[in-house]
Length: 192
Image (cartoon, rainbow, N blue to C red; front, top):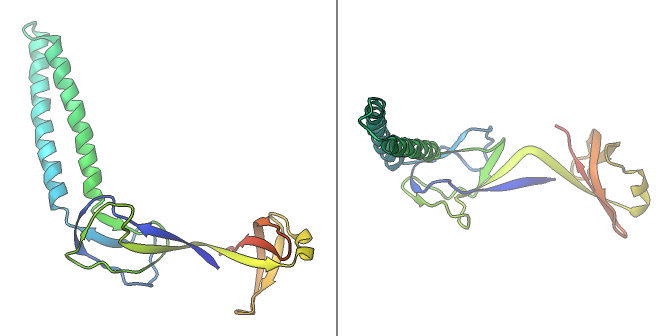
């Protein structure tokens, strides 16, 4: 059986405050893998929200002045651009704050959990903090003699038996296959 392994790399850098997962324990999609200290991201969000509130007030004042023919349209446009820019920065800060909690991408389990409270992690793709094994889909790889590959077609129902687990898996549908010169190889997807 083949399962996908996902390298877990945090989207933001920070200090680890909690690691509630245990290695090789089943997890559901959305379960918390670890948490980072949200303080720097919360303070950044609060500062941007305060700046946005001030800029919106200034935009309102500039708009009122322009409507009474004592202000310039340029000042209103400049304040509007500033408000739009701060709104975008607030959205980015909210995203960063949300990413301080890393969640399981799907059903599965984690391995190689070397992460501890107090550790510092970075969002570098070359240094994953743990490996996540996706169990939402299992791929069964089989080796078949070339003579029997004539019966294998995508979507065709088949039955198989394993020497490791002699129970019948029935029915399964093959999704794609590759043929090679002796022996042929087939890749089938097991249905849950």
